[in-house]
Amino acid sequence: MKKSLLALVFVFMFHGSGHAADKIRIGFPDLAAPFVPLAIADKRGFFQEEGMQAEFIRINPAIALQALVSGEIDYYTVLGPGVAAAIRGVPVKVVAAYVPISPTALVSRSEIKSVLELKGKTIGVNAYGGALEGMARLMLRHFSIDPDKEIKFLATGPIDSRFGAMKQGLTHATLGSPPIDFLGKKLGFVVLARAHELFSFPVSGLIASAKKIKERPDEIKRAIKAGIKANRYIRQNRDGTVPVMMEWLMIDREMAIATYDSSVRTYSDDLSLPDGGLRLLIDEAKRVAKVNREVYLSEVADLSILREAQKELGMRK
Image (cartoon, rainbow, N blue to C red; front, side):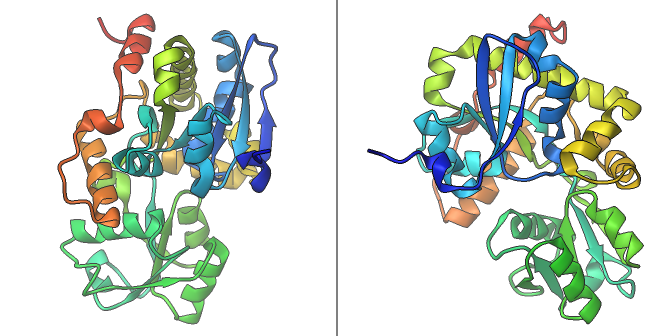
């Protein structure tokens, strides 16, 4: 008998609190700010308003797309791997974007005053070839720094270890999502740049299988509508969002407030996916996979259901 993919990994479940007819399973990789819309949609009743009960599965990105295609989860939330998988021919597509601009911050030792001063230096990342290194390369290229010739990357693990390597002088900078900027400043480091101020690079949203798009478009539309309501709540209600961030991210109030303030502008109020940001995702996926052919936006995204959801919420005519 074929083993469940979800049985092969550590599964973190955050159950929806309502009683709804349709139960959905949404996969996410980590307790981080780009995935807070999931918790808001649950805790503030937006999934329930759409007749849904959501279960959130913390799943290893390496098998998440397999689980999505097999139907073991209904949606996945990290857009980069979804786009890369679609380019490889996996039958999945992006249907909405929670965070269309990256909240990633580049943090350095105090003696480094600008991104240009990182030339010839070492940047710590969690793992070689991962999403964090990819974001670092994009940010460096924005400042006309060649990441292949002018920067050395060193895999130093999770954020605590990356900061430790900076303290020891093994690396000169690192990067990550909030609250990395807050934590870095407390340690005496400085924020050199924030990705969302440089370019549009979608981070989180909803990815669905081709089968789901064909057979359950109404379910997808309701999940999108819950996400739109959650993001609008986040953008408009600081006091109501901070307690959910504290619970979801398992952080104290001071850190939750700092995380909110650093990331609130990155949440889309209508879950739209800008063409330029999607093209950047495609180009980065092509670079990593060494794909030379032209990839069309329609190969990796289907935003028709999103437009219907926006229309029903009065956001477009």
